[in-house]
Length: 293
Image (tube, rainbow, N blue to C red; front, top):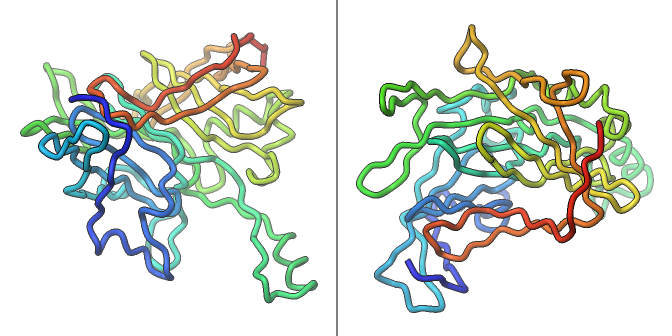
């Protein structure tokens, strides 16, 4: 595949319609290429979308990705807040995707949400809405789903076996109010004060994910501490008693489950350049310094 500057995304018209005047294509929060497929997510849904990159339509400067297939997260994972009414679903707010060792990894934002006032609420209504801060349970997803290849395309599956090794979909242990990551951050001297602040107000807000070997690197949009951004490093391991649950291995100082890296300035970029080795990439603009959590 040759590099392209523009990728035209074509979504299935039915699945593109989210109702209430919203469209799937208008709220894409992340993109990841796996071979001849492009994976994207809308942060107001509980699904991941797969598009196929068409080599035949490559013009050198642009190409098309279509044949839209939707994968509902509930088919592979236990959503903290199951979808019982499509009109009232709690979004997963997927902000990070990466692929490594036969798994698609994903993360929700883990952020709190402050209710936004409407233009016609008036002063009293606006104050009431601004005082409303709620967790949305499906945002506390940090999970992996096995990937299998068939006819040159990537598919998600709940379980698979490759080379005698069993793989299974699994997610970090948690509830609709948090998970093992947020529990660990409660003891962090830098990040703990921001756990009860909405993401849009410089509270905890995961905005990117990179997987390298056994480690996950979670890039934070917030908090930003005096101009310093933070990347959290964790190592999820399978629970011996339940292959569908992940726990955090102690890797930080004092056998804590997290390590954190601070950078004086960080740039995040998702490169949708159509190349067989391209993935979402994290670009540190300056050397990072380790900061003990």
